[in-house]
Amino acid sequence: MTVRIGDEQDVERGVRIWVAAHERRRGSKPAAAHEARVKARFGRTDAFWVVAQRGDSMAGMALAMPALADDGAGPPLPGRCHVSAVMVNPAYWGQGIGGRIIDTLLEEATRHGYLAAQLWTQVGNDRALRLYERRGFVPTGRTDLLDDEHILQLLREPGPR
Image (cartoon, rainbow, N blue to C red; front, side):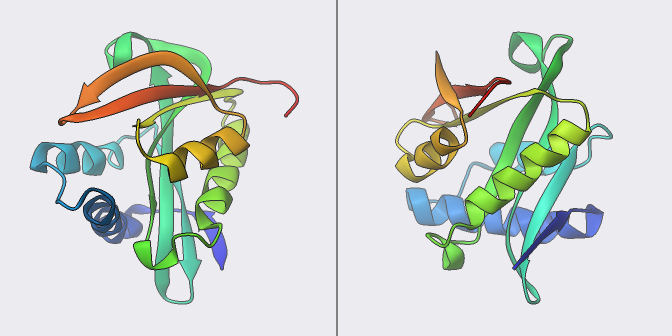
């Protein structure tokens, strides 16, 4: 398996994987508005992403962009990126691919000048919570509701791991 910097040609396949993973985890397709938000993030000029490939198959991907104050409505938070659209093809769950994706994305974030990273994940997604906590993310205590799903914010600050 290889993990590489992603490009525009990866977006459609990646979004299809995100939909499949959502459907497998929740038993239903994501709301159309949620899918549109995910897809739109890949069109941002300040976003970058990584892709995991196994042969010709996309195993997963994740995106990062500047973190913004006021839940995305405010100015950029200096030195902090927002991790989003983390997805692993359900056919590859449990094989450590999510960790490789996040590790590579965080390395790339450092090259872009980000020392801290934040993200939101579903409250009941224990697989994702373990993945992020192993990489130094801790809950901030903030929660929200997104498309009828309870989510919580995690933050990874600079320092020893």
